[in-house]
Image (tube, rainbow, N blue to C red):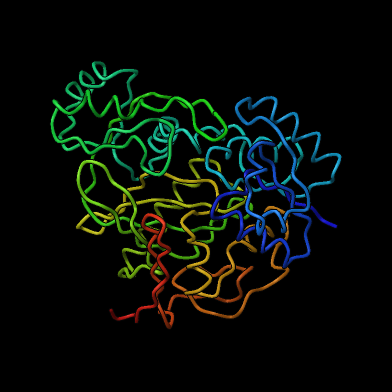
Length: 372
C-alpha cells in the first residue's frame, strides 16, 4: 500500500489529512517525538498506521532519521502539517526524489527575513521591510530609511501573530523588540528560532488569505478566505469566511500577487497558504506565505462551502498524481483545477464563516447567505 508521511500531525490540518489518507486507501505515518505521541488524541492515533520518532530540535538528525525511515518503508509523499517543519519537509522530499519544493529556498518559506528578501528580489507586492539584530539598530535603520509610523515589528521566525506589534512611534520600538525576541525556541519540539527583528510598513485594509494547490510549479488558486482580526497593538485572528466577497478585478490582483509570492519562494508541489492585505484602493500586499496546509480548520470550511477536498488534493499532489480522482462538480471563486473538476467563478450557494473556540467553548460554524 502507498504510504505518506505527515510531519507533526497533532494540529488542526493533521486530522483532515489523516481522514483524506484513509479515504484514498493510503498508509499514513506520523513523525513526531515519542513523548508527544503519548498525548495524541485516540481519534487521531486510530487513523495513523504507525508513528516514527525523531528530534525536530536537531534538523540534520531529523532529516537523516526520516530519510532512512522513508526509504525503508517506501514512503511516496511528504506533508508538513506544522509550519515550523516546512523546511525539513522540503529537504526530505528532495532527498527522496519526491514531489516537493525547491530545497535552495526552503528556509525562505519559514523565515520572514529571508522571505522579505525573496519578495523584494522578485518584485512581489509586499510591505517594505527592514531587519536588525537589536532595537537600537532597528530604530536607527528606520530613521535612516525614512519609514513612517505606524510600523509592524515582528520576529523573523514565529507564527500565529506571536511577538507581533503595531508600533505608532519610535518610543514603542524597545518594548516591541522585547516582545518579538521573547521566544528563542518553539515548543513543543524546542526548535531554535531566528530572533532577528523585522520592521514592516503597516498596510491599512482588510485581511485575506489565498488557498492554493501548486502542481509542477503552476499555482491553482482554490479560493480567497476573508479574515477577521482584533484591533490595537497586538493582533489575533477571530474568524474566517469562505469564500471572500471581492470585486473580480481585486480578486484577480490578489491571485496574481499570490502567484508572484509562490514563485519567488520556489514552491513546486503542495498546498500553500498566502496571507495578504488589500488596501482601500484595492491593491494587494503579500504579508507572508505558509508552505503548508492552512490552519484554523480552513480546509474544512472550503469543503463545506465549495465542495473542494483540499486535504485529498494535497495528498494526491505530493504523491505525484495528476487529475486521477476528481471531486464533486461544484463551483467556486477560483481557477480551474484538474483535481476538483471544472470549477469556475460564480457565487456558491452559501458562504461559511468559522470562529475559533473562545476559552473552552467550541464555537460552531454558521452558514450565512451570500448577500449578508
